[in-house]
Image 1 (tube, rainbow, N blue to C red):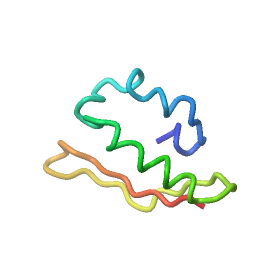
Image 2: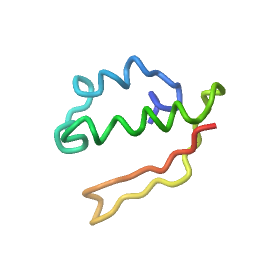
Image 3: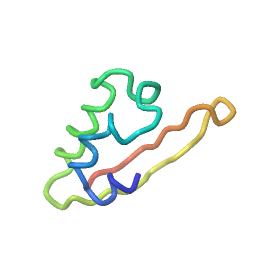
Image 4: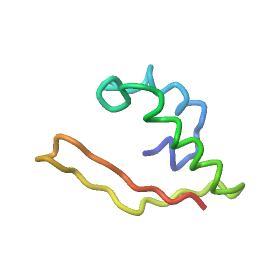
Length: 69
């Protein structure tokens, strides 16, 4: 969340080393790469907004919806 808001792509690209449960959250890179495409489609402003954040299935899973301006 913080890395995305700060547009810290260097830390984001190292997600596999930084996240304790990375194999559960991002089992393969194709679960992560679309985020980078969406960030690039937002333009040069590099601003993010959290549209929605939720926990489902009794808190076992979470998801966030982001807007890139």
